[in-house]
Image 1 (cartoon, one colour):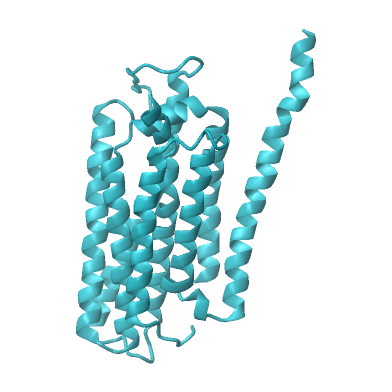
Image 2 (cartoon, rainbow over the protein chains, first blue to last red):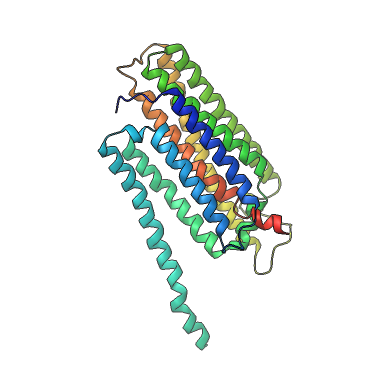
Length: 106
Length: 199
């Protein structure tokens, strides 16, 4: 454990940022952003969520002040999650490429 | 603790994977199911949980600086906010059960669905909704139990600026549960709201 003590003001500041993020996410969800590109709302929502989660990890969970080992563990955890998503979706998304010609020939 | 949290990322990650896949396969069912959720209660719960993360962070701060009274105060506040979250969640669940939206043989969907969307697809959304929020709620209950232990031992004066690892680690766990909700809220409650506004 690192013994760096995060000051109270930092916590209040991060708390404020999280609240603003929550408000933004609700407001942005109600605006139709599909005319930019399909799925723009989801991209905005996830971007805000990732920023909020990063703030929590860095400040509330003290990772910013932690050792390199903690950094490696955290980054590896999310990287592994990325592998799960990318490999699974690359399977499911590409399945239809194979099935389609068979269906059409019938 | 961080290694444990990484296993937790994987635990929830599997469910997020299921969400991603079925949302890709059944976009219509997900929009219909999601827009039926209570956005007000969902937003309130998000605020409640972020507040509880702040009180938990402050409890850790007061443990580090050796202020026992404030530490106990903020731990109890965290528990109250956590309990409030679960009560609100309970009301939401009760409403879903009443409306036959719990995915089982009694699942009923009366509202109109867009062409190509079936009741089964909406039911799939509710499966994932109940699995993810249910697992999240279970983590909250475990967290409340852990904090109850902290309150007891803090009361006994066990935690000092030199030794307060249990407070710090429970804090990490509590913030992790908060992060899961930060993702669950937009993904479950907000995914199709822009379409609602358009019509």
